[in-house]
Image (cartoon, rainbow, N blue to C red; front, side):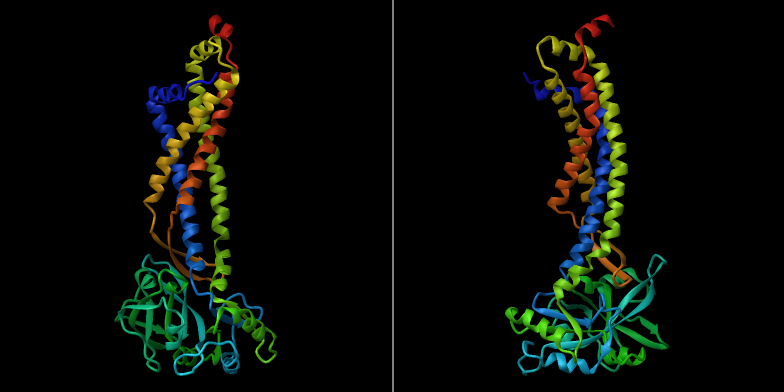
Length: 385
């Protein structure tokens, strides 16, 4: 015979102060886990959602990304005129050679961080349809002008429109702000390729970005580029290239797992303490239930259900608190390029579900020993007391 669930709910209401305090403690733990999951999800999504499958990025063999890639300029013509590269209305290959360098700038909070400075051209805009100038105008080649990601301009000093950035003993005015729908390019500064190449004295390319004529030719074009001994570059689809950079969040995931375990142990003890108190104060009730014919497994299940309800309430509190951080903008170091990457916290239904499961598991683990103690209560022992 099973004990009605309303018995457990009434018990939690009778001990409402302890219920609220324990649930709130669990809720704080769940909120931290939800926020960390949202942070990791936002960082991964920023990289995964960057790029298009019909674009290819070509970098030097052995390089992990554009920052540590470089190769001779003459390889650009060898690549862009290969069969399979898309052509525009003027029958020109839809491809752009770019240079990427790292610069150090100061955030508005006083800390310094590395940023990616990309030298590109109009073709680079065409190959990134998500690119949009939101304020000001684009740079003009030969004038050493810059356009800055809107997200970076909000986080760093001296990068607003009208400011002049001093780099390599030359002044670079900021003439525009851009955005790329929250992708990895929203953490960069762009300028003219020739300007950056000349000032940094690097007559090389860091990467080539091109559009494939058709999705069916993508694999063939990648094979042509990798097997051509004159080129000797690695080609990969643009979306796959950025998806591979998600190992930047491995450290955050490891930290999140450690915190989840440590805080989970604390929450288990909190639930255990409250449920032990409930068992001790209700020994007569439990003995009466045994006398009425309720089995030990029924009592065990009843107390586990009660602790699960308690944890579920904490999970709801935690998810509500964690949801307040949805959309919060933050930045961290991209360990792939050792530069700042800006992302938004993203809370999804899957993260909410994970938070609720985490809470219920804590409740069951913390309530098991008290429930087992309740199931072992004997009527004769209570009468003797």
